[in-house]
Length: 202
Image (tube, rainbow, N blue to C red):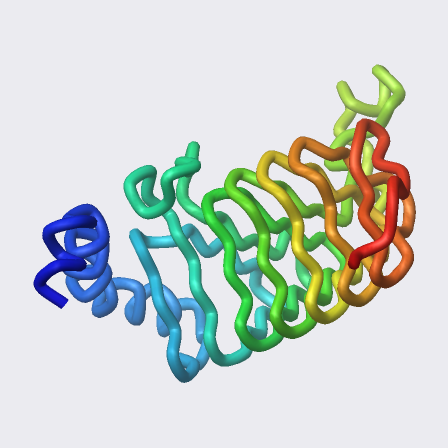
């Protein structure tokens, strides 16, 4: 153990900070009416934006990295978990890990078990703004939404954008920097802008 500390002092620093922030993170979840799960780990304090009348549910083994020091790839801001309006649902399964980035549910986002999301990725089920200039100026609502589903064992690389109405099939892999606009079949590799299937998971 001592050798590990000498070789990777930054890991020791991260774990000490994790222990220090856990009490405050508990307060954040308690304030939002979210029960504390088993084996949760937080590096830095995530940002929770829970709209009244919405739902947030998280499984065991949740791991969120919200500081630039917590991952060699860096986090450009803390993890943001948001339910945008009343009736929205954000449901995340067991053993979910994410560094930086945002998940914003205006309708429904469901993420399965054993999903890993790379640094600074954004997952959202809404356009936020209309494509029409007049509608944007008038802030016309409702803005288009469509549920997002991320099935079990999905790996999403860093700096990706997962857009509304998308299903990422079980065991699929999304390459770094991809913009996903359509469904990705199970056990395939998708990459690019817009993302397309480029192969199968070995």
